[in-house]
Length: 204
Image (cartoon, rainbow, N blue to C red; front, side):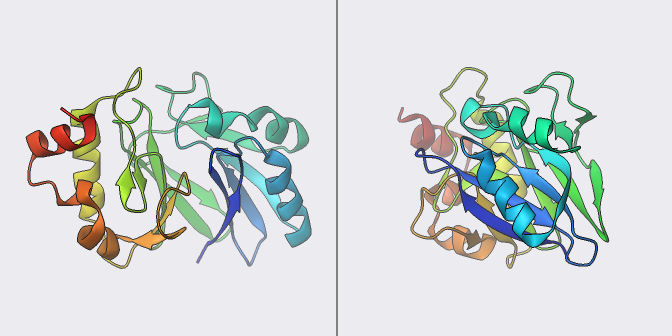
Protein backbone atom coordinates (compact mmCIF):
# COMPACT_ATOMS: atom_id res chain seq x y z
CA UNK A 1 0.00 0.00 0.00
CA UNK A 2 1.22 3.48 -0.85
CA UNK A 3 2.09 5.71 2.09
CA UNK A 4 1.17 9.40 2.51
CA UNK A 5 3.17 12.03 4.37
CA UNK A 6 1.52 15.34 5.25
CA UNK A 7 3.63 18.51 5.31
CA UNK A 8 2.79 22.05 6.51
CA UNK A 9 3.55 24.11 3.44
CA UNK A 10 2.61 27.78 3.89
CA UNK A 11 1.44 30.54 6.22
CA UNK A 12 -2.00 30.01 4.61
CA UNK A 13 -2.31 26.65 6.40
CA UNK A 14 -1.67 24.71 3.19
CA UNK A 15 -0.78 21.05 3.30
CA UNK A 16 1.45 19.43 0.70
CA UNK A 17 1.96 15.69 0.47
CA UNK A 18 4.34 12.94 -0.50
CA UNK A 19 2.81 9.70 -1.76
CA UNK A 20 5.35 6.91 -1.97
CA UNK A 21 5.82 3.20 -2.45
CA UNK A 22 7.83 1.80 0.52
CA UNK A 23 9.12 -1.10 -1.60
CA UNK A 24 10.45 0.81 -4.61
CA UNK A 25 10.84 4.30 -3.04
CA UNK A 26 9.08 5.83 -6.05
CA UNK A 27 7.15 8.93 -5.01
CA UNK A 28 4.78 11.69 -6.07
CA UNK A 29 4.70 15.23 -4.71
CA UNK A 30 1.27 16.82 -4.30
CA UNK A 31 0.62 20.58 -4.21
CA UNK A 32 4.08 21.87 -3.21
CA UNK A 33 2.62 25.26 -2.27
CA UNK A 34 4.99 27.94 -0.93
CA UNK A 35 7.62 25.62 0.57
CA UNK A 36 8.59 23.05 -2.06
CA UNK A 37 11.96 22.64 -0.34
CA UNK A 38 10.17 20.82 2.50
CA UNK A 39 8.90 18.18 0.08
CA UNK A 40 12.31 17.87 -1.54
CA UNK A 41 14.11 17.61 1.80
CA UNK A 42 11.74 14.95 3.09
CA UNK A 43 12.09 12.97 -0.13
CA UNK A 44 15.88 13.12 0.19
CA UNK A 45 15.82 11.99 3.82
CA UNK A 46 13.66 8.99 2.92
CA UNK A 47 15.65 8.18 -0.22
CA UNK A 48 12.65 8.71 -2.48
CA UNK A 49 12.72 9.36 -6.23
CA UNK A 50 10.04 11.83 -7.31
CA UNK A 51 8.39 10.48 -10.45
CA UNK A 52 5.27 12.66 -10.46
CA UNK A 53 4.11 16.11 -9.41
CA UNK A 54 0.36 16.15 -8.83
CA UNK A 55 -1.87 19.20 -8.45
CA UNK A 56 -5.34 19.01 -6.93
CA UNK A 57 -6.21 22.32 -8.64
CA UNK A 58 -4.61 25.41 -10.11
CA UNK A 59 -4.78 28.03 -7.36
CA UNK A 60 -1.47 29.75 -6.70
CA UNK A 61 -1.23 28.77 -3.04
CA UNK A 62 -1.10 25.12 -4.17
CA UNK A 63 1.06 25.35 -7.31
CA UNK A 64 3.55 28.09 -6.33
CA UNK A 65 6.33 25.53 -5.82
CA UNK A 66 5.73 23.59 -9.03
CA UNK A 67 8.61 25.12 -10.97
CA UNK A 68 11.17 24.33 -8.28
CA UNK A 69 10.03 20.70 -8.05
CA UNK A 70 10.12 20.30 -11.83
CA UNK A 71 13.56 21.95 -12.16
CA UNK A 72 15.18 19.86 -9.43
CA UNK A 73 13.68 16.48 -10.35
CA UNK A 74 12.59 14.51 -13.39
CA UNK A 75 9.01 14.45 -12.17
CA UNK A 76 6.19 14.72 -14.69
CA UNK A 77 3.41 17.21 -13.97
CA UNK A 78 -0.06 15.66 -13.73
CA UNK A 79 -3.08 17.94 -13.45
CA UNK A 80 -6.47 18.62 -15.01
CA UNK A 81 -6.08 20.78 -18.10
CA UNK A 82 -9.10 22.90 -17.11
CA UNK A 83 -6.91 24.37 -14.35
CA UNK A 84 -3.35 23.91 -15.63
CA UNK A 85 -2.98 24.02 -19.42
CA UNK A 86 -0.60 21.55 -21.06
CA UNK A 87 0.50 19.35 -18.15
CA UNK A 88 2.72 16.39 -18.98
CA UNK A 89 -0.17 14.13 -17.97
CA UNK A 90 -3.67 15.49 -18.43
CA UNK A 91 -5.92 14.04 -15.75
CA UNK A 92 -9.54 13.10 -16.33
CA UNK A 93 -12.04 11.09 -14.32
CA UNK A 94 -10.55 7.70 -13.52
CA UNK A 95 -7.00 8.38 -14.71
CA UNK A 96 -4.68 5.88 -13.00
CA UNK A 97 -1.08 6.78 -12.28
CA UNK A 98 1.29 3.91 -11.56
CA UNK A 99 3.64 4.58 -8.67
CA UNK A 100 6.01 1.78 -7.76
CA UNK A 101 3.93 -1.24 -6.73
CA UNK A 102 0.79 0.85 -6.29
CA UNK A 103 -1.30 3.38 -8.15
CA UNK A 104 -3.09 6.67 -7.64
CA UNK A 105 -6.50 7.30 -9.19
CA UNK A 106 -7.82 10.75 -10.09
CA UNK A 107 -11.43 11.65 -9.33
CA UNK A 108 -12.57 14.76 -11.20
CA UNK A 109 -14.37 16.83 -8.53
CA UNK A 110 -15.20 20.24 -10.04
CA UNK A 111 -16.79 22.99 -8.01
CA UNK A 112 -14.06 24.88 -6.18
CA UNK A 113 -12.39 25.13 -9.60
CA UNK A 114 -13.35 23.54 -12.96
CA UNK A 115 -10.33 21.22 -12.85
CA UNK A 116 -10.30 20.21 -9.20
CA UNK A 117 -9.32 16.59 -8.63
CA UNK A 118 -9.12 14.25 -5.64
CA UNK A 119 -6.33 11.68 -5.56
CA UNK A 120 -7.29 8.23 -4.27
CA UNK A 121 -5.01 5.37 -3.29
CA UNK A 122 -6.38 2.45 -1.33
CA UNK A 123 -8.59 3.85 1.44
CA UNK A 124 -6.85 7.25 1.37
CA UNK A 125 -7.86 10.43 -0.48
CA UNK A 126 -6.09 13.76 -0.91
CA UNK A 127 -8.94 16.20 -1.35
CA UNK A 128 -7.30 19.56 -2.10
CA UNK A 129 -9.83 22.35 -1.58
CA UNK A 130 -12.88 20.23 -2.41
CA UNK A 131 -13.26 18.83 1.11
CA UNK A 132 -11.67 19.95 4.38
CA UNK A 133 -12.01 18.45 7.83
CA UNK A 134 -15.44 19.74 8.96
CA UNK A 135 -15.76 22.09 5.96
CA UNK A 136 -15.65 22.28 2.17
CA UNK A 137 -14.07 24.56 -0.40
CA UNK A 138 -15.32 27.98 -1.42
CA UNK A 139 -17.70 28.31 -4.34
CA UNK A 140 -17.69 32.10 -4.75
CA UNK A 141 -14.38 32.45 -6.59
CA UNK A 142 -13.84 32.95 -10.35
CA UNK A 143 -14.46 29.60 -12.02
CA UNK A 144 -16.25 28.17 -8.99
CA UNK A 145 -19.60 26.39 -9.38
CA UNK A 146 -21.67 25.68 -6.28
CA UNK A 147 -23.85 23.10 -8.04
CA UNK A 148 -20.79 21.19 -9.26
CA UNK A 149 -19.26 21.34 -5.78
CA UNK A 150 -22.43 19.87 -4.27
CA UNK A 151 -22.38 17.02 -6.78
CA UNK A 152 -18.68 16.36 -6.13
CA UNK A 153 -19.29 16.16 -2.38
CA UNK A 154 -22.16 13.74 -2.97
CA UNK A 155 -19.69 11.45 -4.73
CA UNK A 156 -17.19 11.65 -1.88
CA UNK A 157 -19.93 10.88 0.66
CA UNK A 158 -20.43 7.49 -1.03
CA UNK A 159 -16.83 6.37 -0.53
CA UNK A 160 -16.24 3.70 2.14
CA UNK A 161 -16.72 5.15 5.59
CA UNK A 162 -13.19 4.23 6.70
CA UNK A 163 -11.67 6.30 3.86
CA UNK A 164 -9.01 8.61 5.32
CA UNK A 165 -9.19 12.25 4.24
CA UNK A 166 -6.06 14.34 3.71
CA UNK A 167 -7.23 17.93 3.07
CA UNK A 168 -5.58 20.80 1.22
CA UNK A 169 -5.61 23.11 4.24
CA UNK A 170 -5.42 22.79 8.01
CA UNK A 171 -8.85 24.33 8.63
CA UNK A 172 -10.44 21.75 10.91
CA UNK A 173 -10.17 20.43 14.45
CA UNK A 174 -7.82 17.67 13.27
CA UNK A 175 -5.31 17.42 10.41
CA UNK A 176 -6.95 14.33 8.89
CA UNK A 177 -10.38 12.76 9.09
CA UNK A 178 -12.54 9.97 7.69
CA UNK A 179 -15.68 9.89 5.61
CA UNK A 180 -17.46 8.45 8.63
CA UNK A 181 -16.47 11.42 10.80
CA UNK A 182 -17.48 13.92 8.12
CA UNK A 183 -20.89 12.32 7.71
CA UNK A 184 -21.50 12.93 11.41
CA UNK A 185 -19.84 16.32 11.83
CA UNK A 186 -19.55 18.22 8.54
CA UNK A 187 -22.55 20.52 8.02
CA UNK A 188 -21.90 20.61 4.26
CA UNK A 189 -22.15 16.82 4.13
CA UNK A 190 -25.42 16.94 6.06
CA UNK A 191 -27.25 19.22 3.59
CA UNK A 192 -30.41 17.48 2.40
CA UNK A 193 -30.42 18.98 -1.08
CA UNK A 194 -28.74 21.47 -3.41
CA UNK A 195 -30.87 24.39 -2.23
CA UNK A 196 -29.89 23.92 1.41
CA UNK A 197 -26.24 23.45 0.44
CA UNK A 198 -26.25 26.59 -1.71
CA UNK A 199 -27.74 28.66 1.11
CA UNK A 200 -25.14 27.38 3.55
CA UNK A 201 -22.12 27.65 1.25
CA UNK A 202 -23.00 30.95 -0.41
CA UNK A 203 -24.54 32.60 2.65
CA UNK A 204 -27.72 33.40 0.72
